[in-house]
Figure 1 (tube, rainbow, N blue to C red):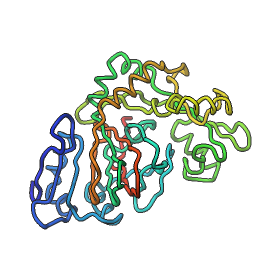
Figure 2 (figure 1 turned 180 degrees about the vertical axis):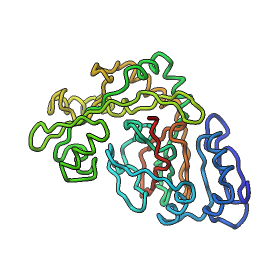
Figure 3 (figure 1 turned 120 degrees about the horizontal axis):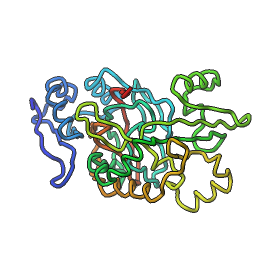
Length: 321
C-alpha cells in the first residue's frame, strides 16, 4: 500500500494485519486517504488492522483518524458499562478497576443495532498487562458448535436489568437522560419493556438476536452477550451474595432465552471456553490504533498495572432489520 509496509502481526493463528509507515511520513489520516479501498479490502480479509508507528498522540489525533475512516459514528446509549465521552464520537474504554478482566465480547451485541467497526487507540500504555485481547468470531462460533448456535438463533436472548441507586450503573447513565419521559420514549422506540417497581427501582427487559450474519461475508456468528449478563459471569461468592440481597427475580442484570427459560449453564461455560481458547493478545504501544470488524473479532481487556489510557470510537452503525 502507498506509504505503508504490511505484514501479519503474529506468526501463528488469527492475527491483526500490521501496517507501519514506510518512511518518516507518519500522518495516519494521509495514509487512510491514500489507501481507502485497500484498507477496506484488508479489513474484510483479515478482520483487524493494527496501525503502528504513526503520529497519533492525542484524542484529537485519534478523532481525525476515526473521521477519515468513517463519516458515521455510533453514540453509546442503552449502556452496559461505565464510559466517558471525551470528544465527538470518542469514548474512554470501559472504566472498570485495573484488577478486573473484561471478558471477550462483540460491541453492543446485546442491542438490536451495533457498530460494524470499532477503533481503539492507545494513548498511554500500561507498565504491565492491559492488553486488548481479540478473538476471531468465526473460530469462536465453530468451537461453540452448531447445536448451541441453533438454539440461540431460534430462541434468542432476553436481557433483564434492574437499576437502583448505588448498584451497577444508574439508569440515568445507561439511557443518557434523567427524564423519565425520555426514558419511556426510548424504550418504546427500541422495543424495551420497562416498569418502575417502586420509586427507585426500574426494570427493563429486551429480547434480541442470539446469532447474526455478517452483512458482506454472510458468515453466521455467535452475536450476543448472554455470557456476560448471566449471573454466572460473576465470582460464585459474589453471585451468591447478590442473589441473597436482591432475589433471583430482581438481580441487577441477568440473561435468559427469549422465551424466559433459563440458559443451560453447560452451554454458557462452553461459550466462555470457546472465547478463552481463541483469545490472542499483544502488548499495546503508545500511538497504536487498532481497527476491528466488530462481527469478525470480539475484544476484551486484561488486568493491568500503571496508567492505561485507551480510547474508542464506534463506527458505521448497523441494524440487520
